[in-house]
Length: 306
Length: 293
Image (cartoon, rainbow over all chains, first blue to last red; front, side, top):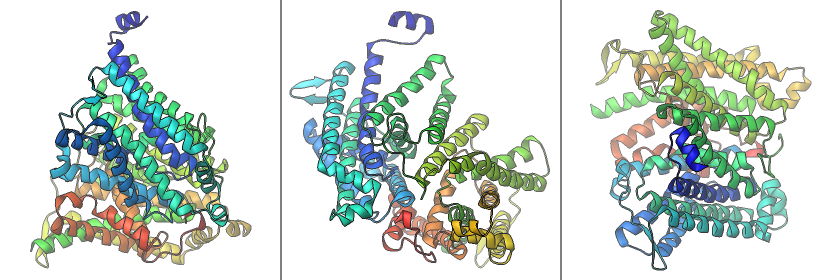
């Protein structure tokens, strides 16, 4: 079947391509599911997930290139680093909700993008970081895309289970209480502001895992991978798949990664492909806001009219 | 000499940020949601002017007036055919924001597809001369920008404070339900507010196009500065928006002058974060509406 498709459509359809898609879906699934902690569970719409993704990717890459650190140490350092960096946005915006929280994360995203481009001594600016070594895990050198796909799927599964446990725990219940009525949660003696800071840090830490995977998979990162557009893509995955359901963002990641591939099958010229893809994402977002604001599998429809 | 030139450029750039802030702020304070598509309206203003002047071949003045009127119409259409139906569905402010983000993405990419991503300019040869002023040089374009901006602040301020439609708009901004009970049709108010706000956005887009270049993401950058200016000044306050725009212009100039390059691009947003922490209502703002805090 695969060979038939490739013969008639003239595209490369082999196992490497399939593994590539699996890796991409896994990375975006981690990003979208971690963002769902914030958007769907706690009701804080954030557009800075690409900033934490970038933090993970750059911390991982710098440790791998400069210190030749083992992969697990590197991931833990990236998670910790991203969580600490997230305090820079979560503590200032502790009193903010709704539009204003969105604007604060928006500003943070732009500061990070600008830093990646201009802090040349650390990030090498627009040149990016190249030559990131392959992952060596438990003595196995993960170089082929097949092995990397296994690593990515495993990382996604572990992250998903941890996030799922958090969401099912009493902590997760308080998160949803904040989403529905923060004042009421406070009146029950919950430290909602402290919890919001923790949730942002947790979400950032898992985004950093995605960043580490991406850096090692591509072996090259530059600031164009971590812009506002990327954050918007991740947010769209959460909203389209369905905020607040965990499985929704997972599906959203799959759909939005595979859609451009379908467009490629149709054979659009590559210079307009990026625009058409984004046109499609935007259109999908608008349509869903009209027909079903809670997305395909969502449990949270972003509140009623106030 | 250099400092004076920087200061002058800051004033001119700041005046355009103020205009964007004013348009955004008027729409936000009356309609109470984050109209992200404002960015696309700014871009449309510049592209419409370019189309009328260079593709259709109209005289520049006619082309500009026509483009500004078209952006006002675009704003009215955005409300009438898009936001109005979302409001009918009892959409929450967050749903409006997400839909608006989607709409912005659609329009921006449609412009990219139609015109390509190349940079264009509205003033290929004419810069309308340049004149010495207080030890710096001001170009004709900058004089026109400042004049147009100051006239528009005055016009909007006067219209809101002294005319009947302005009073009605302020009434709806203040308390939508109470305004309804007095027989004010809020839909009509929203329509007019969108048309006026978008008109300001169109003017801002054209001014940016004259001073710099036209590209499909120009509105995004301009809106960011406008939103920061509006928040720093206090959303809903006209003197606030104007002061905020000039303040942002000065901060940027200060960044270029004194700060190392890695912080220049982000300084404005760092200032915004500082304002959100210490003074979320801005210079002149009233306390935030309850749902945002």
